[in-house]
Image (cartoon, rainbow, N blue to C red; front, side, top):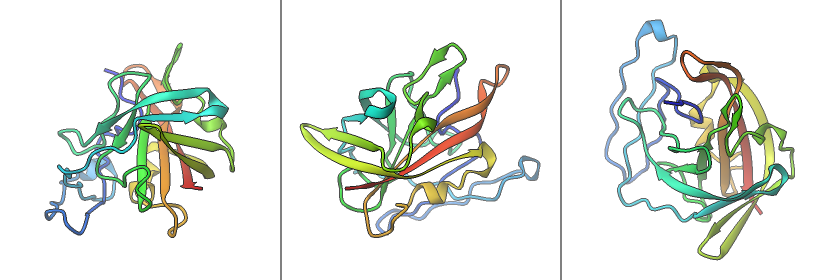
Length: 195
């Protein structure tokens, strides 16, 4: 099984909606060298507003957006194929006008590119769109960074980069690929705001 996108083993979200039930602290082993985190509750009334994501600069045209939650171990789930992107249903809703939506997608594995293979080529001011049943929401990229997987701050990924604007944050794998674990060493993070 390919484990890419934002399915970081042991990394869980720090998110609690005001109307959500209390969260529980997830146990973290010292040997994992990760800060303790809190898993987000699954918000059962959350439905994705988005249906398709397009990123013209890197050739992403109407990638289907699927709703995802958390895996059994509390990590963000990832799409089941290389062509879909996943909206984390514990994040803001695309097009809602508030908060930040978090979308992940696979970069692929060597020789088999995924939908987000070119994500690291984006630049500030590039445009992304979410199409929901004919209504198009446009976002502009404000920041791109690449970090080692264990240094990704998922709390930051859950917030808009500009607090007074609706955000759309994207994440995928990059760096060195280890065939035995089917994992990449780094993550590409893209922060965009609605225009």
